[in-house]
Image (cartoon, rainbow, N blue to C red; front, side, top):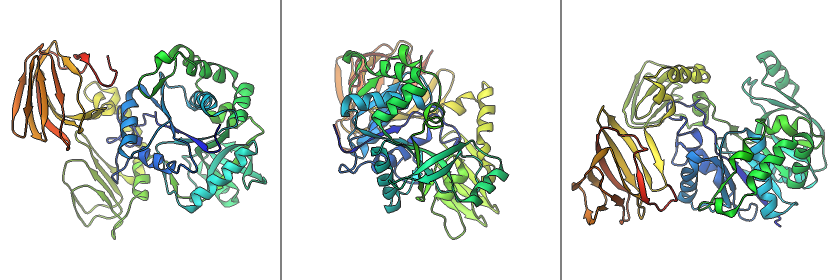
Length: 477
């Protein structure tokens, strides 16, 4: 039992609308765009008040499990657990699985709040006043959604028409409206009783389960089966949903499954600053603009350039005589386009995916994160590749070997403890070691700063699946 809100954070999406920084293997919730923290970490911070919230539950997938755990650890955020979805099944099955876990851990009377992890929200007094209103409405038995008061006739959002006011201060939901044409959006903006559908919810568990069983019984049935597994399926703090049960859940959103059908739906009209950061234009609007209207997160030189967004990971960007442009440079690709056209980046991504030569640019990020740190691809040839490896203090890679490649390691920062068969040695900056093909080896960082090294691989096959793990601290086979 708990009198606090149980936060559930959805962190499994693989959107590519913010390409080239966001890709299938590195979605926007885990990317640092304009500041030191990711959208996911900012979402965690909004539920960090232990007087108001229990430790959050994270919903993500296998690919992002260590990233979600590590980014929570970076900001010292305790988690109740991380639920791993075996396949994508939209928001209704995810919410149902979370509800089953919350009911098992916190009881029938618990109140659950569902967040997207990739929204930018200004969590000031107005925001928490809306949270309090939603909490009161949920305690009275309402399934609550947050409706953002529109600032423009946007056509990229769904809308909610608000009905009569409830004792809690929330409003009844009169109806949900699909993404409208511009004329309809302008009409609703002028009417004043319509809000954007934010995808943020507050649910009393008993009512949510009852309505799921009434309107989407298969969703609740199979999601609950997927959660209630043998404890032997638990790995560290990860809760693995049973694949056979979860894939039987209909692929449907919580809006379609329940919210548009139930009589218990309520909306809290919300005036706090909110953006789903669904385009580079939205990122520019959310950023700190200089005197010329530019938002810059890069080493850059701008001449006679206004109202533009510049983000670069490594390259120095020079712009001249431009207005209203987005220039986004990742480690291996550059996007240049009008901010007004940035909603259509997805079309470019589709074109890249369709060509064998460019498919990887749409799906794979050059930097991959692991529970011990990660690596960035520098260059790749037919029988060789070079990577920058970074290992966090106190972490170690698995004890492993390779069947098809040898490796050379050169330390450029920090101290490395290297195991090669029976030999264990310490390497410092500018020292190197050779790992022969088939040798059992391990890399550790015993120091207090991040270890960085350059790894050069040579061999007939250089895929990441050529790893035979013998001992691993993170439960990987």
